[in-house]
Amino acid sequence: MFIRRAHFSDIPELLAIEDVSHEDPWGSSAFNGAMDSAFSHSRVWVTVAAGTSKILGYICFQHILDEIYVVNLTTSPDVRRRGVASRLLGLCLLWGKRQGARRAILDVREGNIPARRLYERFGFRQAGAGKGSLLLERTL
Image 1 (cartoon, rainbow, N blue to C red):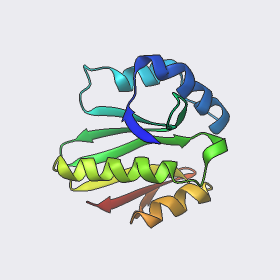
Image 2: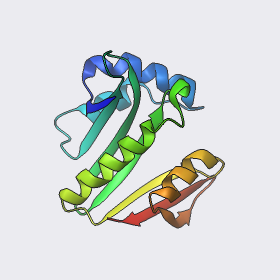
Image 3: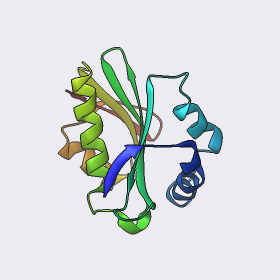
Image 4: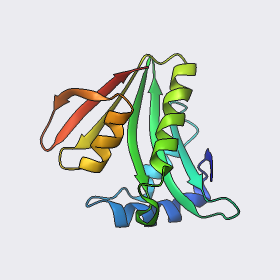
């Protein structure tokens, strides 16, 4: 398994993962916008299965000033709890720290216990709450 920057040609596969993973999935315009080189603060990385071109998961995040904002972290249902999300998140946080970010933030659905446990393992703590979601943050 390896991680690389997403390509526009990956969007159909990202949409397929998104559709089976979320009640309100992103559309192609969201991925296009996140990958658009005009928005250099946005990044989309994918994890690809070794020896194949199959995308196992992806992370979309923004680096703005001294913050990393994780916008979307999703893995294919058939590879959950196998370290894919941990590798993506870990690399994102390491990259952010090396770029001078001091803090990472994200929103998570309050009822998404597996995601909340993952973020807690990475040191995220609740910083606020909204309608059905929690704002989590950690220092880098």
